[in-house]
Image (cartoon, helix red, strand yellow):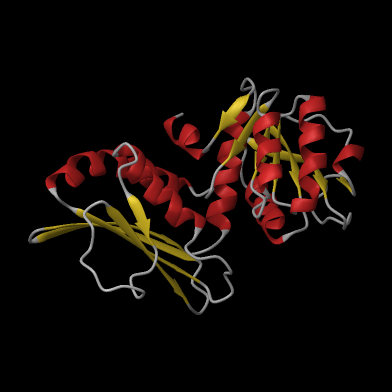
Length: 252
């Protein structure tokens, strides 16, 4: 049984994860942290993580950037591994996450979905087989009309996977409207669609002569990110200090 502290337990993802854990016999939320200390789940909730005195095997963090410093301090001082899911961290905060990983196990990924991270792994051998044969690589991502950043961090992670497999030989093309020129063979085109309430859709195209291979992932709800975070907590519990990502969870 993996014992988890849910940081940001009364936010949307905190509630999703609490519901998922209630149905999982291998994990239990033993405490929550939130400025709203009310809870229908039965576990104690603390207004600040520094006040939490409940022993746990891992922390799942879906909180706010303002909470990151306190979270990392608690994780290091208590030697509790932490899964950092909060987005929008500054360069300084990302550096602090890396620094904390020298003292405690820390997991952080651009996307917590098990499916997306499996796709990231699958793209590497595909790129090594197809790119040298002249296949062009294009990525299209779709999200809801409230999403602020474009392209998505996940789209960049997919492009990075291909580029890593090809020893960094590619550049990313985010806009072709500003110039009239033939597509460069060493570019990955990344296009963003924003509309409606699309949770998330990513397609990676390997386009060759007379054939196209498409890898596609569709998210139908944000629960997939919660499920990934739970699996990450199970994986990270008991791990030595280091910086981990969801690829490590996929590979086991």
